[in-house]
Length: 492
Ligand code: FAD
Ligand code: 2HG
Ligand code: ZN
Image (cartoon, rainbow, N blue to C red; front, side, top):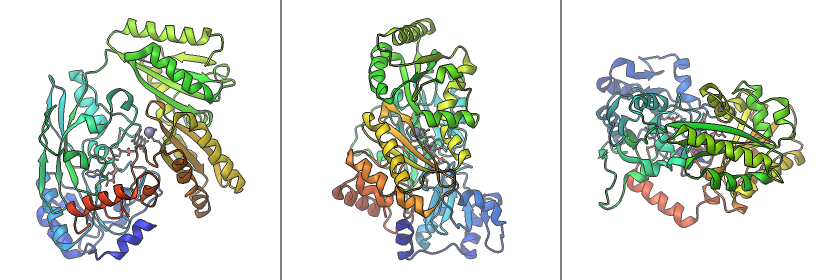
């Protein structure tokens, strides 16, 4: 692991009992977990902080701190800076690239106890919340005011808003509400020397020089610890509908996207794609109610279309007209379409798409490639990868069980998943650099929305040129000259 090699080369201090004693003086007793004496927290209690969501990455942190206030975070970081103790900021630990897991025995600072809403203005829709607030709890908080969060993703029940900002998560609403670079209005960040950078403004417009907060959006905890977020929440749509469309060929996805955009225009809020394998895994593992045998007969892939608008009758009419036109066309792009008829069906259709990640992890061990490539090549990339694995003799129940593709068509973002019986070096070597070279051949991105973490530090150069990487390194050194903040992540 190149990130680990880098970490080993640096002169870091491991957390020792004397450090834990200091942390106890600045934090309440329940906020310090440490397997070191005299604390002796059982190591099982630390396992959740040392293991990622996929059970792919494992750390050996002896100590986890759970501060409650920004001042406590600042005190911890200042002390770590003085003693060169490396830190891994951790949110809901749902990241898919190993960013939230120590490479060795770094100190884990979990934001889980910083979970209060600081303010909400129902007129502007601006929400200011601690970084450790769970995304779903924020959705629930703004719902009575008829607002929604501008971001939604399958991990919403566990991921933190601070983690979402740190990874610049995309998710299912990006097509409608844009990226967090637009909807985050301000941040409060503890910098690697312990200084509190207060940029927690709630201004829609603020052209006063460099927009520093943008640097922390997507920095994956390498430039500081985000302690609070000011974010613009849009008004809840008055009506939302969805429909799942079964397509005979992948080639129909692009013309379908054009037609759907033209006909639904301003009410289109999501256009998501799952291939047949992804669909079958979602159904097999109980993610949403499957369609009937007739409805899926001959379907190579599926598209989920969501509309969100101001008037139910108007939106339903547009969607029904679209479906009618699609089915009655001389050369239909779809075999069939199933419109949700009530809120339960609406959620069930979404579950088929949102639940693929969960389904894949129930089926086996996932190798995940979250890539941006031209829409027209989504299928080609999935098929080429499968054929490559076949040529290496790696397809089969005991090696690679499935190669599947799904993702956010509207954002040009494919999730290529390789589901295997086990994580093995042989599969890993067959996939990398093969997949990254394939992505580079399309001039794509090796990370569309999940980030770099520790998984892709060595692959950054496939999508960023030397000058860009050199300036990223300069920025890192400027903010964090001792390299204590999430070492070995993003940059080697
Ligand atoms: P963690 O996993 O804890 O951390 C992620 C990174 O951010 C780490 O590098 C960590 O050090 C850093 N970090 C966390 N909190 C802070 C903080 N307060 N300050 C500084 N750094 C911090 N991603 C998408 O983009 N779109 C999706 O649709 C999507 N769907 C998902 C569905 C599932 C089922 C799962 C498991 C994951 C999904 N993800 C998706 C991955 C996504 O990156 C995360 O779910 C989420 O954004 C990470 O938030 P978290 O709080 O869990 O962060
Ligand atoms: C999604 O869009 C997430 O469902 C997760 O980004 C993708 O698990 C994945 O590969
Ligand atoms: Zn995604």
